[in-house]
Image (cartoon, rainbow, N blue to C red):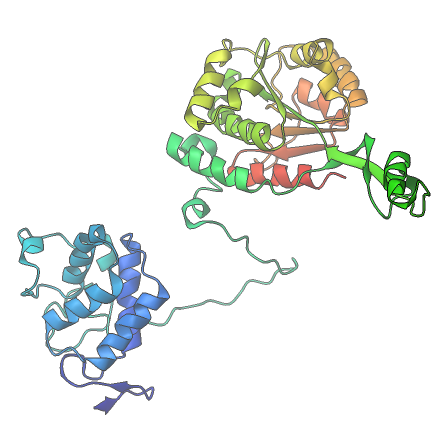
Length: 406
């Protein structure tokens, strides 16, 4: 037995003077880059296996790593390719059926590692054993006046897509991020209703409950029951522009509207030149069928835009009562064929009836954005918030803003 410079004991033989922890961590990192989920318990098991039974040949090292790091049969082929790439051109006498054809070096095997003398592939970049993990080069932090913030924990499958513009996402990625949006709806604003609910700390005496309880004491009201006003979720109404200028964002907004319709019982409408109600279609259990049915109902999509006319049509229809006391979200870039005077009149009526008006503009995140379009400039004074909505991170921010309304 020998000791490494850092004081850890390393066995002789194949892994003489080798840091077992660095070997296991570097090899597990390559497997993760190829899609094999290797956790810390598996890495620890690999280190213990090399400690208890020091491998004296490549087959023993192969089986020790495979038993410790591989959990599913589908991962064996990836493991074999990474193992062969790490150890260069060494031919192993194990699992011959997996080595009938030579595999090219994977992209994860192009790093630079320190190799032991005499090892096959030691002089090739990416070959040989990862005998030690090279230290990371960390530069000096840039000065910043912003307060310390905790990074938002995101699922691994979502973290790389949350800031990607909608036009760069395919249907599968949109479905994945829509599921993430629905999971973000854990709270919702409420409002006072006309009904009352029992509460020992309430200020009002509940007459019926007090009389019902007095039956136990010979109709003598020895204990007064109290109640308070009941609170119910605040209604939400969302209108989405589906004109030609909004085409890259329509599918993402439909996913947001479906999440709001399922969780917050929201009323959803789409408009281009006419207004179409989509609430029933978006409440379908299947996400794919819900989006398809909603797209089929909007017959004038990807055409012109008449924002002011459709807002006025909503207020004049039998759905206009839904806007009273509700949070209204309008998703549009502001390009409108109606005159600004019509937008001013429609937004005045809408603002008088709604509790909050939030405008989502996918162009608001662009550097130097200013609402210079006539319709957008006319609507802005009547909006409580104007938020960017070009990525799913931005849409999640919209959910947080609505949830904070009290």
